[in-house]
Length: 162
Image (cartoon, rainbow, N blue to C red):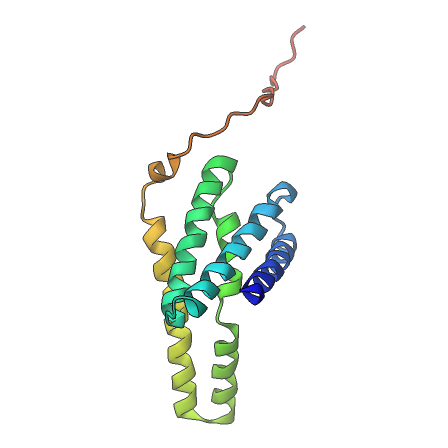
């Protein structure tokens, strides 16, 4: 369990760094990191504690980060993709893609197809998990009332009063 938490905390820094590179607003970086933590934590718990396959674990983790992204989007008033893409980054099957390309370059056809099938399964898990939650209407995420700001921004008038 301690390694799961350690790897999940490392994902916070990885997702925040990814969000900085892709110019996410500074005040939203912590939520991008929380979503990265949530993705790897859910993925690792599903594999190690419940014994699910990698594909099912990826789909469940994608569902968890999509739920968080939609809730954060509703409450923070920013697009959900800001959190969603940062949270998906730990789930991307980079090693399987690398192994596919390496086997293809070396001419090992059967290994290439085997690794390619794994890549498609993992990417499909991400897609299916995300779409299952994104298909829900936005009103579902209004369960918790939106917090209003105490000191709202004043709307500037475009015409000067003389």
